[in-house]
Every structure is written in C-alpha cells, then in structure tokens.
Image (cartoon, rainbow, N blue to C red; front, side, top):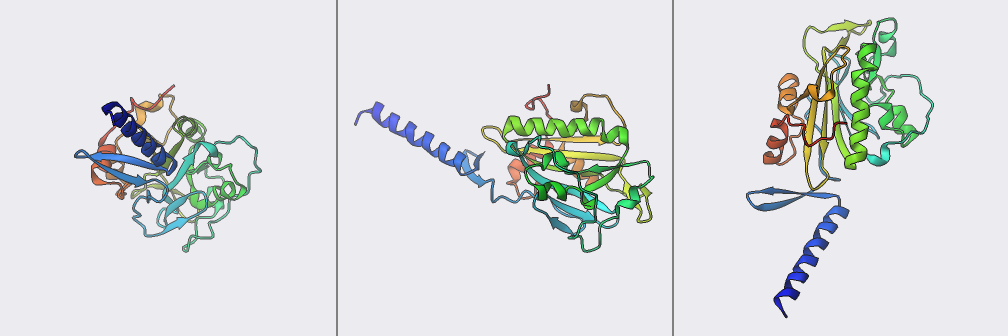
Length: 266
C-alpha cells in the first residue's frame, strides 16, 4: 500500500472519530499532549451549594438559601432549540413545592417597590408548559429594581439567548450575591442583593470558553462587556465553586480569565 493511501486512510479515520464524538455530545480537552474525552450530556456542571438545599426541576436546578429567601444560584442548559417566541400564558407566582423550608410568598414583593426578577428567565423555557410555569416559582425570583430588571438585566438575558443560538448551547448559572446585612422586604425578610451575576459556559467545539458578568443592582446604559469579570471574582464574593467537576486544568483556565474577545458582542 502506498504512503498516500495510508495517509488518506488515517485522515478518514480521524475525521470519522471527530464526527462520532460530535454526535455523542462530547468534547476533547488537551493536557500535556494527551486527550481526554468528556461527555457533556452525563457531565455534572452543578456548582457547590453553601446551603445544602439543592432543588431539581425539569427546566433548571437551584440552591435555595432559607436565610435570604431566594436561590443563591440557578443553573440550567440553554440550547438553541429552547429559543422560541411562542406566546404562553403567564401563570401566577407560587411557592416552590420542592423547597422543604418553604420558599418566600409572593406577597413579600407587594408594594415593596421591587420587581419579582426572574433568575432563570421565562423566555429561556418556552419549549414546554411545565418548564415555563416552573420559572414562576418564588424560589426562582429575587427583588430587583424595575429600571435594572427591565434594563441592563433584560439586555443580558437577551444577549444570552443570542449566544445560545450562535454557539448552539450554553450552560447558564445566575443569581444575586447574597451577603450579610442586605436590605430586606416583606414579612419574611427577603434579601435585596446589591449585585447580580451571570456565568455562561460554551462547551461547543472547537473552542470551550466561559464568560462571567457582575452587575451592580442599579440602572445602567453601559455596554455589557464593561461588566465582565473572572469567575474567580464571583467565587470570591459568593463562596461558591462553580465548575468544581471540570478537570482542574480546564477549570483553572476558564475561571481565571476575564477575556471577552472570543464572545460576539454586537
């Protein structure tokens, strides 16, 4: 067999292998010139919980803080197929039946001057009625100023959907920075965060990348890239380990970076 034929066969096998990996929803990570195959379907992307109360719903997972009467984080996958514009009837906000300590009642927000700000947006979960309705559990909301909720926060949510369509799928983690001595509202003392964060992981080949945003809880007309920080920064503020199950070399690389040049801002 000629050298050209052998080279052609090797090329075909290599391409077939990568196509197989793509169909199997896997990604490759290189470390010290070795290749590790990680299955993105079975992989556990959940952050650590500082409260010990992780709730799993159809459309998202959360870690509930009874002290602050809201989630310290909400996490979910966002695929381009999830981005629909079908109108669904908005349900009433209700308490989360899975929170053992009971999530805050919606009446805490009444006449408080704050919106019931979604952490996992209803617009990210239009694919099914159940997952859409779940976003109206009070475990998935946090007090937000209207100018913030309808402004820069909404802008970031829309940008997240844009990236999900562009990069095929993302893993999203979001929440308020819960700390001591926050202002509270209602009879159950729901904390009002001074800052909110959103972390996005793009695990689509050929480039695995992440980006994190830390937004002061106030109206702003600044461009979104002005709020990009490292994931390490948000971990420092929250005490949460966001990608603890990633291989250390990949976790360290992604979490230390505050580079946004490889994300499309338009």
